[in-house]
Amino acid sequence: MVEPPEVSDRSAPESLGAALKDAEPVLKRLAERLCGNAADAQDLLQDTFVRAAGGIPPEVRNVRGWLTTILHNLFIDHCRANNRRPSHEPINDQHEYVTQLEPDGPEPEWTRITVAEIRNATDELEAVYREAYLLHTFEHLSYDDIARKLGIPRVTVGTRLHRARKKLREVLTARFALEDKP
Image (cartoon, rainbow, N blue to C red; front, side, top):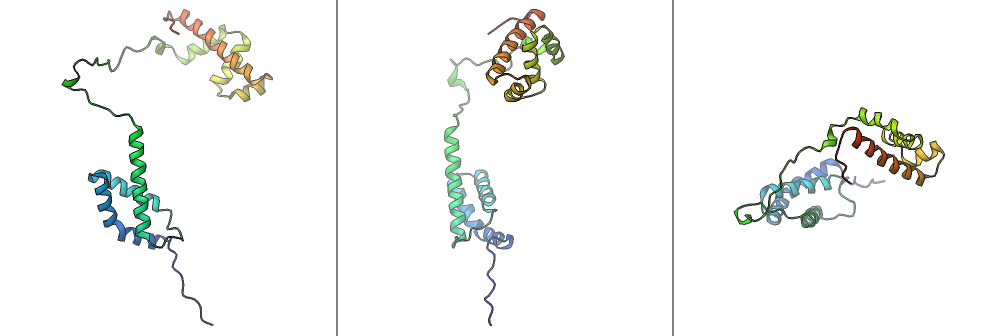
């Protein structure tokens, strides 16, 4: 009985590496034409190789065509992503009437308050509000976990946290002579 010849595994690293090496010059030229500069073309080529690293699907007959399709689709994805980003325009002499904002304003007053001072201020909260606030803020429990632990509905947890924060804001504003801004 004659055994069939071994079929090479086209997703094996050797065949994928050979296919990438063979297609690289063509893909590089295409990427440079699409991108218009070498740096973006190299990034696009790298993204193509990363995408192809999963292996060549068994239904692919033309590996170079498959890689070209990946590169083209990635280029379109990059273009779409760039179109979703807001455009940034440098401020120059043509923008003399545009008011520039101060890059770093003064530090807000509340940044002086430490976590220990906030913990101490919770003593002035009513017990039901303090308990929910401490469980959520310092023990990082979810609303559902707090509701189970306290035996209350989940919506009540939100109400108690809201009231605790409101009262805590009043306490801290009075204690540290902060300006109360809504």
